[in-house]
Image (cartoon, rainbow, N blue to C red):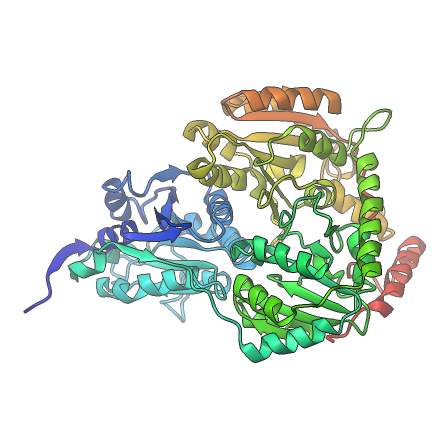
Length: 621
């Protein structure tokens, strides 16, 4: 008996297939793809647009203002759903598609799933060269979409309608793989989108997916347990993978059972609440004195769900030279970094298995007490740092004011510049999984767009909570149009615009390395004869937001209360000092390229001082 088929265009088949995919999360079924973000052009409107029009309920399409910001929103949506659901982005051929390169890189660096459905040149080449096509004379098959090979976990160009039968499931399995998760790119030539094929009906049957959990190897677990049981000063580094695995409870139970101090990476912020007695604080370059103090004394470090990037490791100066690492990670590539003893597997399963091997082990009380004393000292510093009074306005003060008022389940979003460092150091976590600091790619412009995507996801499960965005004036100027998107889609955001007159954190790095201020703050740009500030309140109001400008932190707190009571996107603007008020404690060394030869004595001295710390750097071991 022949298999039943249905005749569809390539585009129609893709959308019908996407709508049929579901996932089970905590005993409840959801559509796996939450919808999409789209800007139509000649490369995707006639065929893919026609197909999407018939699935507006199943796959809601949010109209973007900028393709790059659409990608940021999709990444934030996935992060809010702990990588269990994703959004697609569709863009036209040419610049519409290349605008997505930065957001694909962000998703790749942060290991976040998103599906990119992008227009491409005609396979037949009959009308070549077409509008927006880049011609490579010696390689006619090469186009701008090939650039996505560097920033995608899965890449394909559909040149025949039948190919999607294989390509779509392969792309999806990549996006759902805890070890290989990231963006999937599918190039859709304009002619192929409209070509038809007799697809098997079974391809479009409703399917339920579940995230795979990899069981760790018993020998690896036993080896890790042996090393940890011999530890006198153990420490746990909790990364973002703890949340993606749903292993917060297991991590907490493991730490409590063995009295092991826990520190958090930037991606792992909000694994433990601030008041948990074993939460010793954020680690690394934008960390805390408490976490960095125990890191340099720890003899065995259990890294769970972290890729150990340089802001976590202080460019590998944060630890003792003879410290030993055990790394639990679903990704083999991450588990073996710096000669770690790898435990390749799911964090939840691995922590349970490791706990079973360590029954009876307890960290020496003196070590746990030392860690907790360091945390109390750090808490006192933060309390003073976020306080206000007879001091210039600062990021930390704004963060503290919001932290004191917000709901425990409100979500905080920050990225790039000085704000992620200040949020990482000064934010006191009120509930698990409530902080999104994009520092994997450290991408300016993520903040407002990511807030919009996070709010779309948040509204699906916690519609009565708020998404709070911290953004500096530099990032605001780079990408702000999703204020308009949030207003149009009625996805409320509370946005704090903290204006320091330019790129102040890079100016700080410039000054810290002995250089004079140049081309970062508006006041220090020689090509700007008469610098002036933007009226952010008026600008945001023009996009439909409820806006106000405040003079100080007291005013910000009152404005934030009004924003909480509102059902509209609210933008609160406040000037902060570009030089004063930075968090001065809690920093680990960070490797920065400084001039080895210079006529500037101040730069030479800074270089020598910077390099003097390199003696602490671990050389791959």
